[in-house]
Image (cartoon, rainbow, N blue to C red; front, side, top):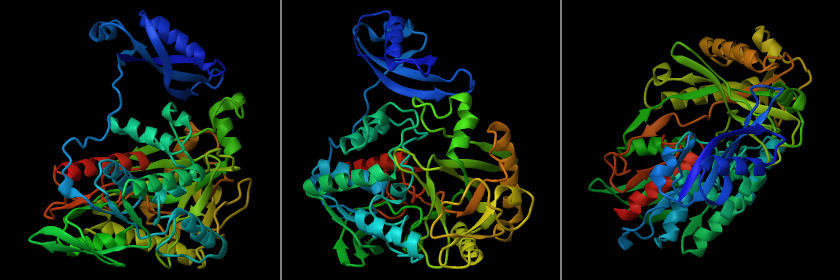
Length: 519
């Protein structure tokens, strides 16, 4: 039996073995083995930065009695595994549209259950996709079917590879272990804020693809889902850019930028609802300044990870917040449509770049935009305005933080140089965003500066626009995970409106796979 001893706080210079010994003493019973289950940084007091550990102990004794006597103990359940105990062999060769985290883990688990899934992905395999993204950065030429949004691995492959999630689902541990099995560092199993980095994630994605193929599954790139064929209200086939595929079952894992797919599904009777999302900018600081703000005199210490932050501010019914923070990273071009500028953040596993960047965004509700596709059109309007403000060629408009806060157009170079390629142009975000969003961004920057010294430094860089924070629509599904009114179709992941990041999307993909296989 295993128990968790949590809340063990030690100076960060102390070796992890100290936490293990303290947990053994606290348990007060015979311990057969002890391992670190989780470690986080507590930097609230800069003179006394600490690591906080949770330790997993394998012990012998009565579980109920042991837990009752522990101040900070709890039963540690082994992680869940996908359940295919009732898999129906008639459900072989289901089609999966999309090979981001949701589609990838749906395909992996179905392949292991012997159901030989057929994956169709509109974008390119990862190596070709890397070349297409690089071409956009270097030449300003966009491939609308192979970019940061579309292709093997999904949008998260060109990010920091964050594996944090707010879900407490037992499948989270399974997903993390699968990443390790396919090449991720073992440290992600114990980090409070695990990440892989775009460099390592690319190899992991290829490894998962090859396992799927090795188990009899198929993965077809440059194959876009263009239509569905319904017979008596149930799916019978899908139409793709490479022809028709007979498909009594379809897992829809389109990603949050598959606007054409949302429109097609709506025409075919899917029930779509507008949902909240957020829009804003990327803000860049020197990583060394972020480290100093969070760690004080210990900034740069070899035992401490690169400093990260997460801030939020709510005023009335609207929120400004940071997310997808990329320590030591760069701002990247994430457009998928001609004539629109979209930004995102990306960093490697070592997070060795000079700048830190994060999304700085404001919440948008369906009431702000109206209609099923009002949010999608609002995103598109901002992206096109940013393209025009940048002067074309996918250059992005920028402002220094000081000019933005003071309402002055343009960019005054300072300590932080913009990292965005294919280039930037001085701009004025007040001419792109509605007034209420500009004001909320300014209030957020000012408030976050009170929590993190230097956040509002005049020399910071704001690059825009960040619009693809999440899907602007939700594809309604029933308790059996099938789309409302469309039998045999399983909408899942971030694009369908049921996840928010790599981990939650992967978990949702597994659950849709279970529902499909066991029906």
